[in-house]
Length: 144
Image (cartoon, rainbow, N blue to C red; front, side, top):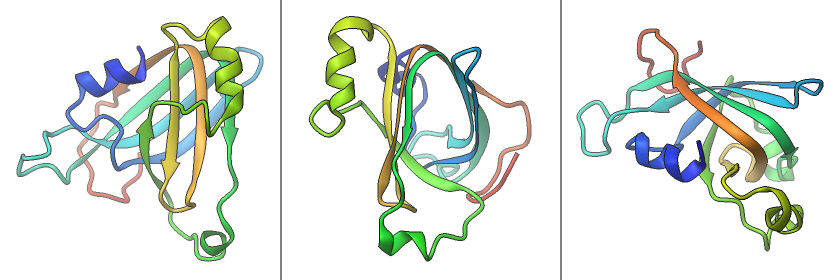
Protein backbone atom coordinates (compact mmCIF):
# COMPACT_ATOMS: atom_id res chain seq x y z
CA UNK A 1 0.00 0.00 0.00
CA UNK A 2 1.26 3.48 -0.85
CA UNK A 3 0.43 6.67 1.05
CA UNK A 4 -1.85 7.70 -1.80
CA UNK A 5 -3.76 4.38 -1.61
CA UNK A 6 -4.11 4.77 2.14
CA UNK A 7 -5.50 8.29 1.68
CA UNK A 8 -8.08 6.97 -0.80
CA UNK A 9 -9.15 4.08 1.43
CA UNK A 10 -9.67 6.09 4.63
CA UNK A 11 -11.62 9.38 4.61
CA UNK A 12 -9.11 11.29 6.73
CA UNK A 13 -5.98 9.46 5.64
CA UNK A 14 -3.33 10.30 8.18
CA UNK A 15 -4.61 13.81 8.98
CA UNK A 16 -4.49 14.55 12.70
CA UNK A 17 -3.51 10.96 13.45
CA UNK A 18 -1.85 10.16 16.75
CA UNK A 19 1.24 8.00 17.03
CA UNK A 20 1.19 6.14 20.34
CA UNK A 21 4.08 3.78 19.72
CA UNK A 22 6.87 2.99 17.29
CA UNK A 23 8.88 -0.23 17.09
CA UNK A 24 11.73 -0.94 14.69
CA UNK A 25 13.06 -4.42 13.94
CA UNK A 26 16.38 -3.86 12.22
CA UNK A 27 16.99 -7.54 11.51
CA UNK A 28 13.66 -7.80 9.67
CA UNK A 29 13.90 -4.26 8.18
CA UNK A 30 10.42 -3.48 9.52
CA UNK A 31 8.76 -0.72 11.49
CA UNK A 32 5.42 -0.79 13.28
CA UNK A 33 3.59 2.40 14.17
CA UNK A 34 0.73 2.13 16.65
CA UNK A 35 -1.72 4.91 15.90
CA UNK A 36 -5.10 6.41 16.61
CA UNK A 37 -6.80 7.57 13.41
CA UNK A 38 -10.09 9.19 12.49
CA UNK A 39 -11.97 6.78 10.24
CA UNK A 40 -15.20 8.78 9.83
CA UNK A 41 -15.67 11.26 6.97
CA UNK A 42 -14.78 14.88 7.82
CA UNK A 43 -18.45 15.96 7.63
CA UNK A 44 -19.64 13.14 9.94
CA UNK A 45 -20.87 13.70 13.48
CA UNK A 46 -18.28 11.08 14.51
CA UNK A 47 -15.36 12.95 12.88
CA UNK A 48 -13.65 13.42 16.26
CA UNK A 49 -13.75 9.72 17.18
CA UNK A 50 -10.40 7.97 16.94
CA UNK A 51 -9.85 4.29 16.21
CA UNK A 52 -6.70 2.32 17.06
CA UNK A 53 -4.76 1.21 13.99
CA UNK A 54 -1.38 -0.21 13.05
CA UNK A 55 0.87 0.79 10.17
CA UNK A 56 3.41 -1.95 9.42
CA UNK A 57 6.22 -1.07 7.03
CA UNK A 58 8.40 -3.83 5.55
CA UNK A 59 11.65 -3.66 3.61
CA UNK A 60 12.39 -0.33 5.28
CA UNK A 61 14.79 1.84 3.30
CA UNK A 62 14.95 4.56 5.94
CA UNK A 63 13.26 5.81 9.07
CA UNK A 64 14.48 9.21 10.13
CA UNK A 65 13.15 11.14 13.12
CA UNK A 66 14.01 14.83 13.21
CA UNK A 67 14.43 16.29 16.70
CA UNK A 68 11.80 18.71 18.00
CA UNK A 69 12.59 22.38 17.57
CA UNK A 70 13.79 24.09 20.74
CA UNK A 71 10.51 25.90 21.39
CA UNK A 72 8.63 22.60 21.42
CA UNK A 73 11.21 20.43 23.17
CA UNK A 74 10.75 21.86 26.65
CA UNK A 75 6.94 21.90 26.57
CA UNK A 76 6.29 18.37 25.27
CA UNK A 77 4.39 16.28 27.83
CA UNK A 78 1.72 14.39 25.87
CA UNK A 79 1.37 10.60 25.77
CA UNK A 80 0.87 10.71 21.97
CA UNK A 81 2.17 12.83 19.13
CA UNK A 82 -0.26 14.30 16.61
CA UNK A 83 0.83 13.96 13.00
CA UNK A 84 -0.26 14.63 9.45
CA UNK A 85 0.96 12.25 6.75
CA UNK A 86 2.26 13.79 3.51
CA UNK A 87 4.08 12.51 0.45
CA UNK A 88 7.85 12.75 0.87
CA UNK A 89 9.47 15.95 -0.42
CA UNK A 90 12.81 15.46 -2.23
CA UNK A 91 13.73 19.13 -1.75
CA UNK A 92 13.38 18.94 2.02
CA UNK A 93 14.76 15.41 2.40
CA UNK A 94 17.57 14.84 -0.14
CA UNK A 95 17.99 11.13 0.67
CA UNK A 96 14.55 10.55 -0.84
CA UNK A 97 15.59 12.09 -4.17
CA UNK A 98 18.61 9.77 -4.32
CA UNK A 99 16.65 6.61 -3.52
CA UNK A 100 13.50 7.41 -5.47
CA UNK A 101 15.01 6.91 -8.87
CA UNK A 102 16.56 3.58 -7.88
CA UNK A 103 14.30 1.82 -5.42
CA UNK A 104 11.07 3.49 -4.48
CA UNK A 105 8.70 3.02 -7.42
CA UNK A 106 5.41 1.83 -5.88
CA UNK A 107 6.87 1.95 -2.37
CA UNK A 108 5.33 3.47 0.75
CA UNK A 109 6.99 6.87 1.15
CA UNK A 110 5.76 9.30 3.74
CA UNK A 111 6.75 12.19 5.91
CA UNK A 112 4.79 12.74 9.08
CA UNK A 113 4.63 16.34 10.26
CA UNK A 114 4.67 16.14 14.06
CA UNK A 115 2.59 19.05 15.34
CA UNK A 116 3.94 18.64 18.87
CA UNK A 117 7.56 18.97 17.71
CA UNK A 118 7.36 21.21 14.63
CA UNK A 119 9.47 18.64 12.80
CA UNK A 120 9.13 15.49 10.66
CA UNK A 121 9.40 11.72 10.78
CA UNK A 122 10.45 10.30 7.38
CA UNK A 123 9.69 6.73 6.34
CA UNK A 124 10.24 4.80 3.11
CA UNK A 125 9.58 1.09 2.77
CA UNK A 126 9.08 -1.42 0.00
CA UNK A 127 5.60 -2.22 1.28
CA UNK A 128 3.18 -1.21 4.01
CA UNK A 129 0.02 -2.56 5.56
CA UNK A 130 -2.51 -0.45 7.42
CA UNK A 131 -5.19 -2.02 9.56
CA UNK A 132 -7.61 -1.03 12.26
CA UNK A 133 -7.22 -2.70 15.61
CA UNK A 134 -10.45 -4.38 16.70
CA UNK A 135 -11.18 -2.39 19.80
CA UNK A 136 -13.51 0.33 20.93
CA UNK A 137 -13.14 3.76 19.34
CA UNK A 138 -11.28 6.40 21.30
CA UNK A 139 -11.36 10.11 21.84
CA UNK A 140 -8.21 12.14 21.05
CA UNK A 141 -5.31 11.40 23.36
CA UNK A 142 -6.41 7.84 24.04
CA UNK A 143 -4.12 4.86 23.97
CA UNK A 144 -4.27 1.22 22.85
